[in-house]
Structures are given as structure tokens and as C-alpha cells.
Length: 154
Image (cartoon, rainbow, N blue to C red; front, side, top):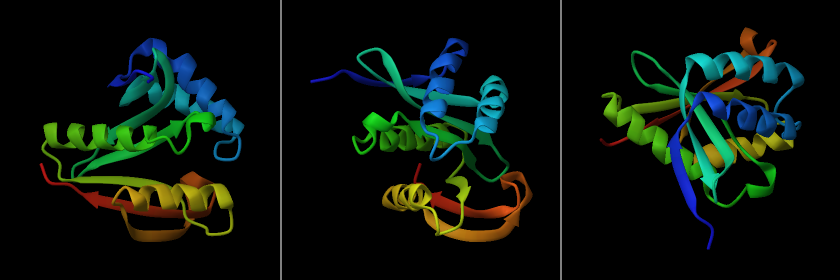
């Protein structure tokens, strides 16, 4: 049985985080690597390890009303094993510690791309509800963005 552990992100985790992003070309563009490097410096987050190796991560931003998931990714070979769900649960605990009762996330909002249909299914399976779709969201290059929210009980 593998040893699965979720912990706070450290500065030294950036290499593993970038490698995960680079391996998920269906979800993340080359430009994402630059953004993730900058965001990893300024945002809080957690990583999930299997037998000491980082296999997934989440970076969050504290907003006035909620904790927003800015980045969440799991090594492709570990999809479907509950690692993303473990990271979501850690975000919920983080939100409660910060006095927030909502977790939010923005993701691609079109229904025409299979990887992001899976992303939407993942968030909905984890209790998120679609709040709004912004048809032309500038930070997404004018592509649609779906805003999902999840109320949590602290």
C-alpha cells in the first residue's frame, strides 16, 4: 500500500509542480509554465505525495468572500486515484482555518474539449456547482470561463 501524504507546498516543490504542468499538455499550454512559476511564489498551496514523490498540487488565493483554487493538477498516470479529491479536502480545511465558507474555481467553460469536460466532471463530483459562465474571459485569451463554487461547513 503506497504512503499518500498531503502537505503544505515548499519553495523547492516548484520543479515538481512545473514538471506536472509540462506533462499535462491537454490541459496546460506552454505559457502556463511561466504563470505557474510566478504564482507558486505568491500563492499558498499544498502538494500530495506518494511514497515521498510529489504527484499533484493545488495553489489557492484568498479572496474576501472565499478561497479560490487558482491551479490544481495531478500527474496523468495518477488520475482517478483520489489525489485531486484529497487536495480539494485540504483546500476546504484551509478555507475553514481562514474563516471562509466557500471555495471557488475558474476553469475553461466550453463544452467542446474533452479534457475540460473531465475537469468539470471532477469538480462537480467533488460538490462544486456551476455559478456562471463568462463567454469571453480575457485572462483565458477570450475563451469562455466557468466559475464553480462549493459552500463548505466549517
